Amino acid sequence: MNFFHYVKDELHCEEVPVREIAEKVGTPFYLYSHATLSRHIQRFRQAFAEVPHLVCFSAKANSNLAVLKVFIANGAGIDIVSGGELFRARKAGCDPQKIVYSGVGKTDREIREALAADILMFNVESEQELEKIDAVAGSMGKKARIAIRVNPDVDPQTHPYISTGMKKAKFGINIKQSLDQYRKAAALPNIEVVGVDCHIGSQLTKLSPFTDAIAKIRELVRALQNEGFAIRYLDLGGGLGITYADETPPDFEEYAKAVIDATRDLGVTLVFEPGRVLVGNAGILVCRVLYTKKGEAKNFVITDAAMNDLARPSLYGSYHGIIAVDKSITETLTADVVGPICESGDFLAQEREIPAFRPGDLVAVTSAGAYGFTMSSNYNSRPRVPEIMVKDQEILTVRQRESLEDLIHGETIPENL
Image (tube, rainbow, N blue to C red; front, side, top):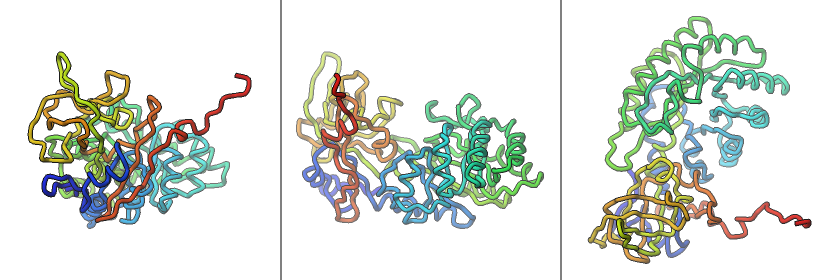
């Protein structure tokens, strides 16, 4: 459920008309619903209330400080994949003991900063990374708590770019080799083995990939426990999908029941890294129609938002709903919704039946709260858009629109040029 709805044909975010926000801040902009963010994290945590668990929101989905703060205030931790995300998590007030560090390419500096912060654990992705963490921890006189990310070779039945749990993926250590890696980790002087980690992909719309992966992972947990490893955490990653168009992913309660049933007797704290499922439908991208154009083969609706603002359609061919802020537009047409970027791949929708927009009309691109702003760029020297959050009747600017001066921040023209 989200809190975007129409009141007398006018799209609202909670109690505020979207048109009013557009008049105040200009377009384009990202818009998040505080009530939706809060409801999603509360429902996710409640679904697992009967078992020990920790929900660590995946910062890569949406790393805005205010968004992170909403989740932290509701008891969540943060899953990070970079030193920058560690910085953001700390700035938002996250307890370091609720931070888990994933990702295949942790640098010396990032490892050092995470150890200094005393995060809960590293999810180790390779043998060389394990050795590196041990060496850095030793140089600091610390013990590094780790889980090894195990690749169970399960097909998540999702887009290949966001499939992470098959043996051809760059992520994790093959499950057949993992027991030996755990034995090696146990022998390292500056490593404390505390968990097992598994993440198979993103935007999963069926339960079977999760249960298939857990069936393999639980055998490893049992084998480790039988060898005397004190496995305290089982990190099952994220990946639960959302409805972009007509998908029907499992709800939190269905997902929780399947996971709890499959892990009930392992005696571990379950760790989750949900991202998209918490923020995806809590945000929209609002833009304005600049022009309409009837081509020889297609109709085009040209907006002031582009692929640099929302990359997913161009990058993945992903679907995002295109709706009118003013629902009184009753006529439709089939068109491509495109932006001003000088690329043929600059589109928000293709061959889509949409409202018959006219120049000046406001457009809402739905399900844009995840991997929207975080993947945006300054391509074509376009300032990045503001992020706005509505809380009840309040309009909160949680990131200001970039200025032209922001575009050249840090750049210099040397005197000898």
